[in-house]
Length: 186
Image (cartoon, rainbow, N blue to C red):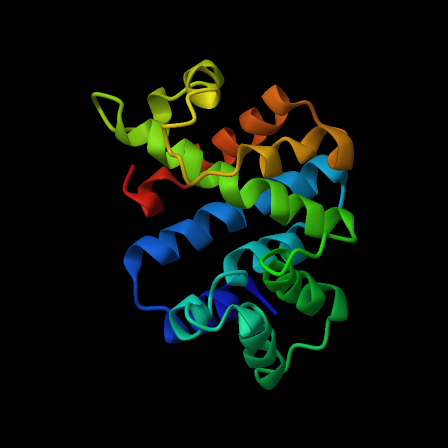
């Protein structure tokens, strides 16, 4: 599946602009993580783009979350099982199952981080990703009331499961998101 086909599928199933921007963010971070690991950048990015693509259909049915999107990708001719399982794995996380592969761990760890980066950006005077630093993000890390829904413990798995320090992980994600700031409107 190409990025263009993935975006076409995402846009056909997801109407919320904010949810789309979340998927764009995770896709960009996943691409950067793939590059860091010398893995397939396209595959990682597509998993990131599509991981929440069925949310508007499954928000009240978490047992089918991400599974539905993987099925839609199959219906569109996708046969790459690693990619399809990567998408489906996002639904597993909501059911308490741990990731199994590096790609799944990357998705698990970066999904929450993108939300924290956006929250930090939105409290900046200029509301621009370009002016956000890793230190800005880390300054909010221990303030549990700030972006209270962000599961920081999920992000912290980057050290044990991906071998990337938290500071470096945040830098990779921030740089990736800064690279698509126009698409994100930030």
